[in-house]
Length: 243
Image (cartoon, rainbow, N blue to C red; front, side):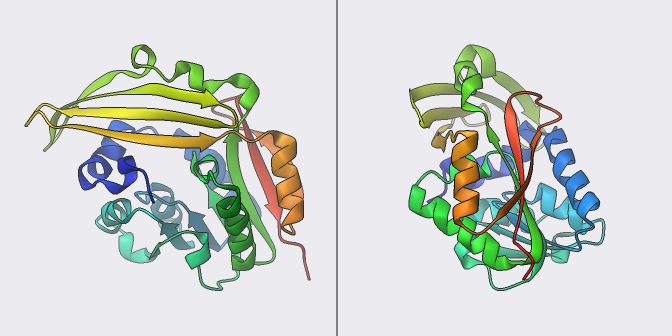
């Protein structure tokens, strides 16, 4: 089940306008270029921002996401016909011989259950061609990012065209590692509706991720720093071995 922030139509519609700066995607676009990827699988594609960025560069992109409302937003964007959209998770991806698979932003951490995580790594590996790569990020637990997930640090109010004024903030609900649960709140001034969404993320240690990748047949190429969040996240670059 997708969280309400991605699945509720009203929240999915304001997801991009409330977070318009997607500079975090630059590292993934750079890796796609570095690898010369021509066929990309974007796992947890959400509202399609990254998938459409790559498609606009002539790359063949498949975007998969379990949230139907987010995919509806993606499909309504200019250029959406260039992307193959799939409603589901990595287990729903057909054989495709991808050069690169990506899990941007919080996607890897949002796969909370161990069985789902194993299925994700297996499903992505099966979708890659021999020698194809997987890249994703995960927060370093030692930096305790959740300490900033409170109303004082996250409150914002925006006037969105066609929507009106929206207030939003985040409250930390529970932090018992490796799981951290928080709640987002949105208040729509136009009609007073208040919507909330609870989410849980799994904070994996670097050595745990490395072991998981090895157990599912990947070769770890490199662990990089996130250039826009130095020292706060690990960016894993792994590959399906050549056969």
